[in-house]
Length: 470
Image (cartoon, rainbow, N blue to C red):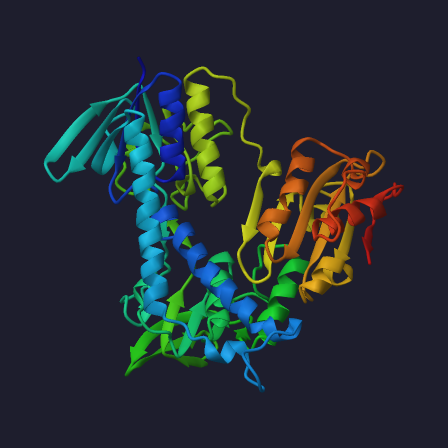
């Protein structure tokens, strides 16, 4: 029986543990905080639960547009609904802990040994676990490192958990902030900005780039920027924050150009650092990048024989779904099961702003720069019948396909529940379906997915590289 030791109980770790056990391994998982890791306890599950509350408030605010109001007179429904942030955050913490407990029970039910402690390598075939009872040396035929990452902190903007927060700390708030300053307009910053703005908080978003979400599809980011500004959010573009400090009952964020932004609270969303320090990587022969990420190939192997890695500690793609797949692939590979290398071209990802942005496959930049020879079709949702019924005004679908063959190689959806709508395009990319095959597949009328089929129909017959927009 193969001894498999996993350091880290996030999606990369616990999914790997289940696969390893299924394939006959003797599995030990070392986790220091709780099963599920950051994804469950402080990141994905908590933030999306907060966003779920914000989505309800958004629907309430839009109620009047579809003809709904509170009682007689001119009372607006939104004016009668207030946010109890203490209860919202208590629910968030409770759901995160419940999810962690569910994962733990599943692993224990599969006879996977869980060690509560911190693990590090002692060469490539031993792991030392430091627990409350001391140190334990665990022999390993195979080791998987799935240690995740933690929020990056600026020395000039130290989080205190009271006025200045990282995204792991903000769920301790009991009262709605008067004015939340968010530094960083990447996915994390934009999602929190969208959520708190929907909950009625005055939000100022500080972005060092020309617009929010610089790593996303430019058309999609432009829509979100406009939605933010139309909602009353203050977005400061092209501004680099260099410090944040408490001043009285508030916070002052200093910008590189000398300006100051004053708020009641501040959320620092300025990136993440891999949890790879103190793991004994160099001594075991595991190569890391200058940023501290573990170097892996497409089957999750590191440069040390028998040592694999998965998740945010690898820097491959900071998604829970990718971490989980890296962990599974590692076990399939090392334990001799059939395995296909990780293919990032088939990964779907989502930004949970309002509206959401979902993407899969190649990007508009790939098309524009010639990395992928292809066609692009963008179709606004405003002409979609279901969108009109739901009073949706912002958003679009975009499909990328190869010329001549019409094979779908990517797509973008900007809409409420884009995370659900992207799945047909993910299936198309994964299975190399053509625009004609997508167009000829029945969709419900009326539905937002109808726009996907319509965009595919409009790509029929185009054989030269171009961007087609309606």
